[in-house]
Length: 185
Image 1 (spheres, rainbow, N blue to C red):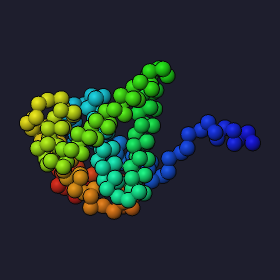
Image 2: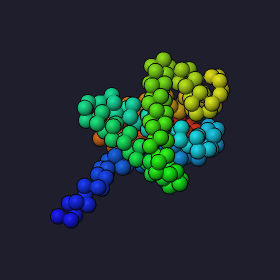
Image 3: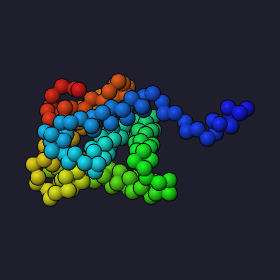
Image 4: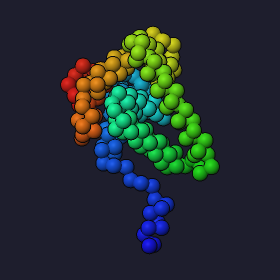
């Protein structure tokens, strides 16, 4: 009985598939090549933007599937939010400020998702413009944004080719940041 009561206050553990998939997102977004070869700012904001971008890429791919894929996309998004909540608390953000910051993070994710979805529908130039604005905070036409847009295009193509079962395997098939057309990493 006592254990049952404690379980009421415990968060449900994510399933292993979502943990692996979100782990692949985090690992990819932390690759040093993004900060060296592609010149993404190596700041808290730059790292956040890459984590958000890779979460978007996986969610975008999963939303193209049936209801199970869409549910999996929601689980990945929930893992992202749990990670952000935990990170804020580890950084020392007070309990009263966490919900406000989480609201801003959610708004940032939905704003980027809308921008990146629309840009993907328009083509690489639109993707580069969205990345210039969100990741680099520069006007469109910056060569860094063009290089990152090439990477995003390669990632979208590779993710689209992967069956969901493979996608949810040991690692996500992101290309190398500095060699977007290279074999899977």
